[in-house]
Image (tube, rainbow, N blue to C red; front, side, top):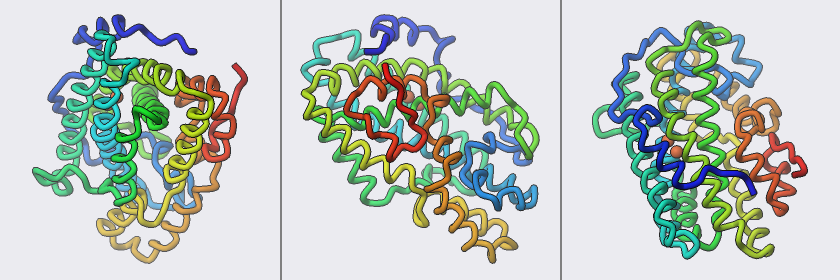
Length: 324
Ligand SMILES: [Fe+2]
Ligand SMILES: [Fe+2]
């Protein structure tokens, strides 16, 4: 088992405002700057990216950045609620007041994150996010919404979605770290400081959430029978398949379609762009940009420690299993 921070320690850190993302962040966003590092966007991994004009690459970068924020809002807002609330009543958890407090703080913080990212997107592109509309790219397909509901209903018995949440929270931290460390992008100039600031502040809370996730995984999956763990691993791998396979109907394709609407001169390249996107399924560099040990060391350590996840690399191409 990993050495997670104790719930008391997590609560003490969360009580220090200097270690928390402020509520109600307001930043200015420059429409001429890139908003995320290029390697966090999908088309970056396709050969056509470098052939696009600067203005096209820049607009794609910005649209994809909005989509990243929407994803953070959706997963941390919606999915975490569905998982943490039932887990607070779990027999291994409910009698630990420090832990349930840490979970409640996490839920409250995710609500603030949602509001901060929704505001950031609205500031960046008020035309795309009129008041009352927070989602443009992440309207979920029915099966994904159903999967969220089912994950919540199952979590007390099968907590596989906590592995997913942990990896996602760690990957949002990796994005923030990268924005903090390197302000200059490869081909688009300097990152927008306002956009970066929101992500850098977000990392403060996520650094604690990883520990809550780890503790919850140990107390649920970690205490189950081998058979139950094997079942968790099986469902997790099935679920990941959808995550690592870009489709023509998914959010990445919606970003491309929005780019074409905004820059109609690209319209005759729609098919080329969508095929390149779908082709990323078997692109190793792209797969490693989704899941890798560099991006998510805690999650990968947790996977390593779970014997039943031995075959995870079949679906999660970036997973390089290590003996522990
Ligand atoms: Fe968050
Ligand atoms: Fe979080």
